[in-house]
Length: 305
Length: 305
Image 1 (cartoon, rainbow over the protein chains, first blue to last red):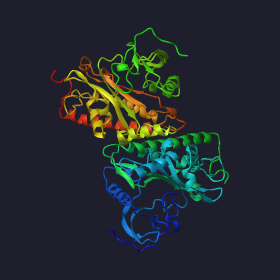
Image 2: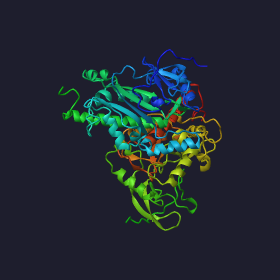
Image 3: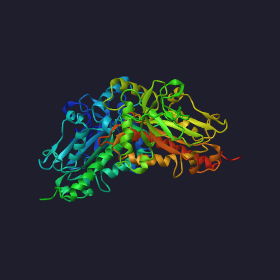
Image 4: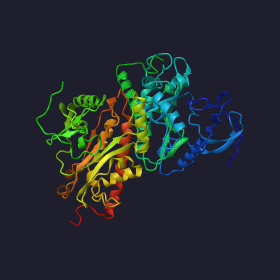
């Protein structure tokens, strides 16, 4: 049914921050080191549903070109050896979005105050509802699934444990978004937001991209993206950052995880849109407060080198 | 504690379409026929909470003037004879927003896919959740609480039963929004949307007002309006409509029902905003399709008179 692919050595992705991991012999996504990301079909309907999304969406001319750019490019479906040694399994083959970043700093945020949707089983509804209420999904409209930040003071990545991240309250989530664009994320309690204007701001920054997506979600009635994520990342290698500017950091937003998408049936995805607007407001607040610190001479990356 | 008011004869409002009614000896709001609307304190915390909202909001300078105009003006709290004969009770005294309309056509829509909110009791959570899932709240982001439409062919109001309205699915809700701006709401199955461009469209129409509110909800973090409604209404008297134009119909949007508001704590009201955007999209769709019918010569009110 699907082409069998076995000419390349696949390995667990180095920069995955959320979701099922292929490490330690479990089932998870793989990369080929040449720009392709292999996501195994999950059990029950979910793998099929996500594959269906990518197949339909990648050829859907109703979504404008600039919006297609916010989704990982879809290649095909291939049968490859699963990461857990259970044999060959179909995988959705996608663009590996961070493959050409030297030191990507990445955050995966699940959008929407509600991850369940009409017609799911009571069991799934209850499971989602428990998580939505326990996390920031209900109060904030989204929850951080995971992130990793390159800390320049420690010269190493900081990636807090999933359980810690999932336990964040609203203030802790806000803090994580500040640390995400700071040079001192790990050691200091007060993030310097040194990269806020380059990463979040600017004409090509995260905020500008999110506002383009928002405009689309205000009118698109093709899909409801339940339990989907905004993945945001930027180049955090010092050699690149020293150049400065938003071109150097190559901040990007990608939407991922469509195992639970449903057809829009003429209604906008108000759950995703509401969460996205809350996400946008959080970033606008950081940009506003970091503009003020700039004016009063706070530390910025590169000063003193 | 509150001034006692007994100089005027109060009566049940003629044009109430949703909520507790003072008719048939029950507890409900009253009007004085001179532009004031008396809303009795509901049991438990809700009356106090709504009074708190109006008191705080009416003097809140953080909300711009044009936004204040989307809320009924707040006068004070007065103790008057309750409509159910139970004796004197505090009432929030508000502007009676439809008092100077001859034949108001009115719709009350509860905004948000979620009417519960953090920290409510499990009992209240379960009650809200059942209603949110059974109605259009979850799929559409809002549900119609009630409406009345003046039908020009029948020369009478049409006000469907609450139970019928609460049982609407998404398509039936969409149809009600079309009937709301039609001259043939009652008799015909295909609404003519004769007043769509005057009521929904134009620089002072419903859509323009909703877009102003949307812009505010994208940034305001003062309040989360749980279980609140958009009340929309216009002048549907034939003498006025014959003049034509959006000035004549005086279409207005007011936000009402704040018994369940909570403080925003620095987060936008993503639940209200998402629902509002879905409401806006529905109205944009009607305007778009009625523009097309205009071009092809469909009946408009006033033709043939």
